[in-house]
Image (cartoon, rainbow, N blue to C red; front, side, top):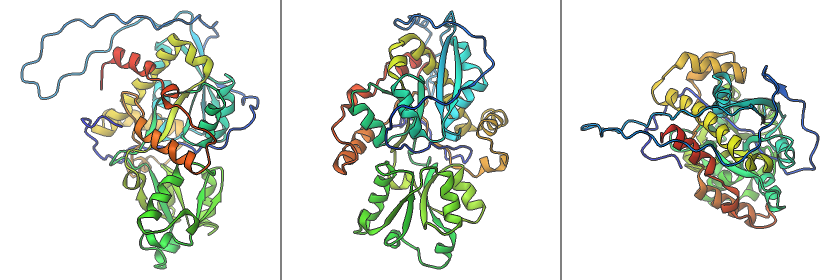
Length: 393
């Protein structure tokens, strides 16, 4: 859960999203990577992270309303440089930490040569991540991820990559505009009988849908759920009147509204405040390379903090929006002023309580075949190292 002390100013700058997971499949060959122009280097032997020297003792500020954040500690980059393969599925604003860190060379400053490996959907990453064909991935929490882990594949959840604390409803339930205009949809009770698009069975957005239905005495069986794996195709389905509603993430929420195809009904922060939507994951092999894995987290959180500074105060607005527009291929820069920002924890910590609740739901519904021990899956050592280096945000 985001640190409650953080001032969540609802600034409609940013965004994001995460594309939804699908059931785990047999490991295919990883797609050909899109490599940054970097010198090739041999991998380095991994041990424990380089010890961080203790910060010098500073005098306590007099009558400071908010203590100043600790100055980042300087540590030499890894040598030789370590190659890291980062899986992404069509960069979206929830990838702000990745996008900013890549563009501003934060990973390179840590001695990492990061290659971007594109995937069509986040679910396609699970198998290559499980077999160490890629090192890092980011995607939605769902049955595919936990079923892979239940088969003794030691993937690690290492950081938040998208959550919905109050004011950060970058994900939302949208209703087809003509349905709203006709008066056929006014309240939660009008979900009954509606056809709602989902990217896969057993994804955590079903939890939100069930919560809405339960408030008015309805069940999931009272609606039709149509599986459409690629979220970008949901927009077409709405436009063609193939479905009545769907859950979108930004920028698709704002795009659907702008194009007159759908109406934003409720943000996920209104339905299930704080839900952990997406996470950063490490492959078994990369998780064991403690030095490089810890350095990656330093680079990632630097980017997340730049994004959070933008959301809070508009700091470096033009630079940040230019970076995000370039990475997400959003050409209408005015869209960034309309989008609801994504929740990204600047200290990296995911909502473990929410994850535990969602796992229980997935088990109860039969989407996960056996219990998973989150204490073995969520590994905070990398974010702990990064916060020690960077100071707590």
